[in-house]
Image (cartoon, rainbow, N blue to C red; front, side):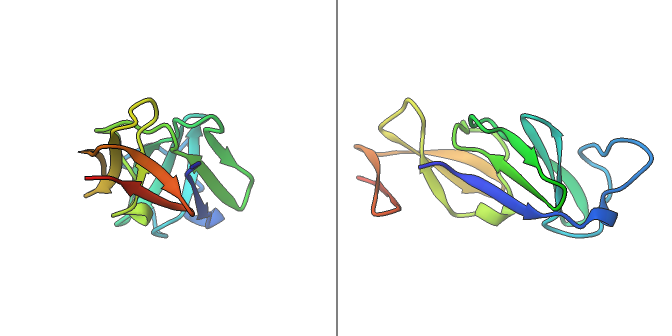
Amino acid sequence: MKQLLVVALAALSLVACSSPEAGDACSTDGSGVCASNTEALICESSVLRAIPCSGTTGCIDDNDRVACDFSRATAGQACPRSVEGQGQCAVGQPDNLLKCTNGTWTTQACKGCAVQGGNVVCQP
């Protein structure tokens, strides 16, 4: 299952004289910008947070929104608050589920992870 994060971009909230960086202040939670083709900066709690976009489509900024493909995320990488509690099967590890917990992808072992009917199923 391909995971994409799409964030509405408030154009004026991230405009600055220099390129925005992780840790910079921001004014619109949930807004974002691509820092590169593999990383998004998402405004969470009024601070820009770096989110890896490790999937094949990376980070795409089309002027009014940002799409971050984190379908190839790994345990320990940051995940956005908008997917907190959600999971996906770990790429190349059929017995692991990745779950966004407290802003970080964590691994949950299972006896098989699969997507069935649009839902991630991890057999305990």
